[in-house]
Image (cartoon, rainbow, N blue to C red; front, side, top):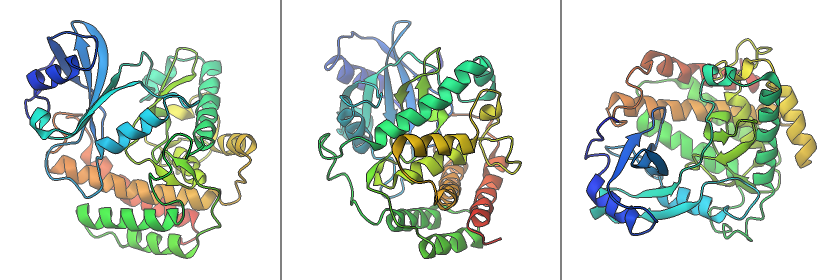
Length: 344
């Protein structure tokens, strides 16, 4: 197990903090989980046994409102008795004397994150179909949660979701951009001008996709992860975001992060949209608008991640990451958004 830099985890202090709150004894060891693009995630071991998962922000300066550990913790804790599968929370630390920055710890969930095509290929076609259906069913379950009954009524404003999001991500883009890309600003203006009538407000995960969920061997979702971008808002934005990451062989210009969901058995984007609409009762008439919004927002997010990697704020995560490809994806996603909005 690779040594963890003391800048990331103060093993003595963090271990003592966990021991006070869980049935576990020192010494604990920490292993950085590769693949994170924003907040950093660690597996916490008791000997050889994975017991917990710890989340903390990246190092270096942070953008305003980003990497809010308390918000992530609050969301998963609030959903613990709902039909949305989330890990059990151990605790939230906001004492900088422990590890320099906020962090939270949750129970380890035994499941599989399908983060690449090799993992996806290990499942049968029937299981991949089940996986697709379970992803949609879980998203519907999230959007059906009664916001007030789980104590999240004050999480965010219930109106003006797209306006708030466009304003937020425009600000993030301006704060982190590494070059001029006028199409990003042009798409933002078009999103504001073409806004459809909103659907009833729901809990919007904000980054719902296959690789942000854990599944069991049969393909059922056993945990939804990475709640950093969650808020109250438009349910169709979550669906658009899911499709934004979904590689569909029928869509040759797909901007999906990998070809995993192009494997036989996975549903197509159209089938996913139909299944969601049928199960939720939400019409899919405006789906292209929300797909465009998702692509534009992902462009802004990718630029922020790219800027953090250039600044060395992500530790040793994915040392072989293709920075040129990440850089290029920003413009590609912005152009895809423009196409979906009929701009080009």
